[in-house]
Length: 551
Image (cartoon, rainbow, N blue to C red):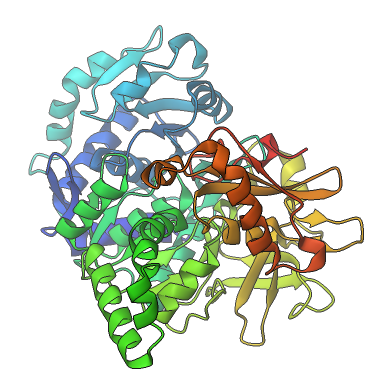
């Protein structure tokens, strides 16, 4: 029996016993690896007293905190299955996932518990606060609160000399079995339970340790991506902990102001983020400066432009703490104009590609990143393009390897539909691959527009052009009555600053349409810019829920 997943945590704790493991950014509460082990053993004792088995599921929902991470680790290292749930889900969706997953226990933030209904949690035996691990609800006939009163004395009896490296021993569980049940937050209107094994996570940990410089002993990490999402959970937390890193949990919403202040203080060695963060900084801080007449003139002169770009690069590096080796961008398509600018100023970044079903990484290139690509397939993962000419004609990206999920929980039909007959996972993304195995994504197969003339249009590529235009906050490109139109939510803050009235947008957007169409093929031309009155509804990962707007 291979126990690599659980063993990697046991080994990390023993090797880094006295080092700092976790910090709450707001309260400044710290946990060493030893203290994390003590909290894990306390929860293991609770699970054992409650007769929790390795087949049982334990649900976890709340903001990124050390206690969230400790609950996750305690469940995994006990051998049970953790069910991380995005705290941004509607309470009805949280309750549905708790029930659908057959979870026996629920660990939850106090503020979220206020919005949940006890009677709706069908299989839950007990609910615990992840603020201080107290029991805040027990089902009828349970005596969990009584057990909690005696828990510390039970732990002391079992560990009379305290928890030590010598007596630390976690559960035995085959790494091929499910360890995490992660519910997707996709844009297709419903969530599926992705069954991820210990082997899946070992693939990620091994790759991060052996083939990148993004994790390491003593590395400082600022965790601000949602931990209930596979991207943040795997690279901000699991891989860092397994490598002996020090994780500071932001513990609050990552607004640009809060995030950049935290970056300055923590000075992270690696940064994992989504395009939205970088794009906002570019649009709000860099683009206005580049559009100044004096800067435009200066950047047209090679010697001067090099100095200006070097200065911008240094300022941008310092904005993110000044100590990072690279910024990894993933989770959504990256705006090409922003990427081109970062490449021009030699900013240290790389774009990766993945999905929850692949734990989540499919491709990345930490050293020789090719602009506009999403890197090469990671070790342990095969990629092929379902196309007669994979280098030039886009086809669906298919994946096979150690990173690929076991399937969807209690959904055999969906599992069958997402795999080919010979075992390749269908990603739903369209792309091409070059001779060096660099992958270039063209768009989602479900969002691809097929014109009446039989041409394929990838709306994400057009949206990237539109979103960089003045007075545009965000957009989606859809097909309506055989016409390609752009739904645009205006940037009202920029309008107020420039004293632009809403009535002026019609003529401004008409000019925008001409600008965008000048860079598009004839079959891609936008027929209309249509103003949308409100911000588009999004998933917790900040992807627009397209299905709400497509006709």
